Image (cartoon, rainbow, N blue to C red):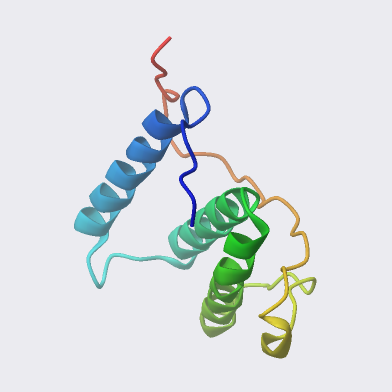
Length: 118
């Protein structure tokens, strides 16, 4: 893959915060620390990030198509409703259908916003 060059303003900083938040969550939750609501939020975040990154390049979107199938499989396993617009596994080699944005349920008590470098 060719070099992508410079990221849009703020993208690298946001991506770094996402990684740090994911590591913090993994450290806090541990194997027995999950609820269905927390798992659904994480799966929504994975889908959102996958869709955003896949929008950068059609071939990358094809490579990431398996992620949508995996998160849908995880939702089924947890008894969470699955968006029916996702292509069947046989169509995984094609670009996945556009998904609706994840439902936002709020960020919980004590959330004080995301600090930006402005």
